[in-house]
Every structure is written in structure tokens, then in C-alpha cells.
Image (cartoon, rainbow, N blue to C red):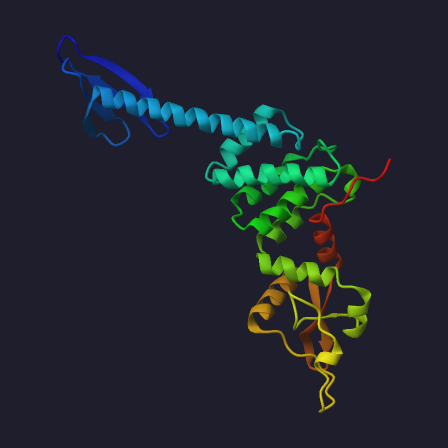
Length: 276
């Protein structure tokens, strides 16, 4: 080693990097992780370090901002909320996390709240936040955001059931639309469907007997198409709806919601604060 050489050590996200700088401003880099060597001019190494530091600073600020928002919902300090994001959500896309924060604030305002009035336990908040920040579908992420706000609203009257989170993880946006229509079907639709919702028109509209009773006098509603049938069976599998029984067994022509399905839809619908 020449007399002017010096050692520097830089901590990176993965492993440790040891740099040997020679008098001619050449850096011989040695990583302890893979025992490899790389030669890099000193000024380029300095620029690279500056860029890493800049990006790291921006990431830390974003994590702290998101942690500050989430700490308002859970029974834990800011540091714990930030650690949750760092440890549990490190692979989540930043834009999804930021969108969740924005939508959460919007739904808080819709509920008439400036701040949550109930702190969530970690065993409910952590899986909810993990699922919400990993969800890439906007409609589904909105469902998680509404669930988060309602759970943090004492006046919503919803139970903090982790079942709601696991069900949402097994639904797609079509499933959510169909379930919402079934749960919120008006009484007139249920009466025409013999206490069930006729499924052939879902998720766009409800159908009535006048649309399928023809010259043959048949009174059976049409079957839903394959896409809707697949969605219906998935929602049935999750216990949120049940088919109306026919002579030959369960049929998908008509279905009705279960108490679990109705509770899930309620939990994912913004409920205004009661007038005081």
C-alpha cells in the first residue's frame, strides 16, 4: 500500500463497502459480501455517495410523513408507526402508500372528522395497512381506506374484525361491486326476486321479471354469464352471500346477502358522525 493511501467505510443498504483510495484518485472498492473488487474514480464515487444520500433522505422524510399520519390511527407512538412501515411495508410501492394517505384524509373529512377518535390496536392496524399499501387497484384500495377511517371512528358502530381484511384480500373490484349491489338491493328488487337478487344484470343493474317472462310463460330468470358466475361463487366461498335454493339445488339465478356480507359492506362505507 502506498504511503498516501487511506481506508474509508461506507454503510450501504446491503453489506459493507470498503474503499481503498490511492494517490492518483482511484478507488479500489471491496465488498465483504461477495469478495469482489471494482475500480472507480474518486470523484465519481463521491457523486454516487451524494446521490444515495439524497435519495435516502427523501425516503426517510416520506416514511416519517406517512408514519405521522398512521400514528394517528393506532395505539402507538410515531416511532412505532414509522417502524411498522419500514419493517412491514418496505416493498410496497411509495405511490400506493401516498395515495392511501390522501384518500384516508378525504374519507375522514367525509365522515365529519378532522382526526380519528379511536386508536386501533396493532393486531388490526398492521394487516390492514399492509394489505392497503400493497393493493394496486384504486377501487379496492378505497375500500381499505374507508375501513380504516370507519374503524377509527367511534360513532361508526363497526366491529374491528380482521375477517374483513382477509375477505377484501380475496376480492377483486368486480366482486366488490357485485357484493355492494346485492347488499344494498332495494326491497322491490328482493320481492321480485323471491327474496333474492336476480344476478343476470349485475353489476350494472337489477333485472325484473318483465324482462325475461316471454311468450312461453317461463318464470325463471336467466343465468349470469361465466365472468359473473365466477365472481358470485367466490363471494359465496367467502360467506358473504348465499344462493337461493332451487328444485335441483343451489342456483346462481338469485342470491341474497349474509349478515357477514352486510357487515363488510357497512364497514367499507363511510358513515357520518352522529349529530351532537
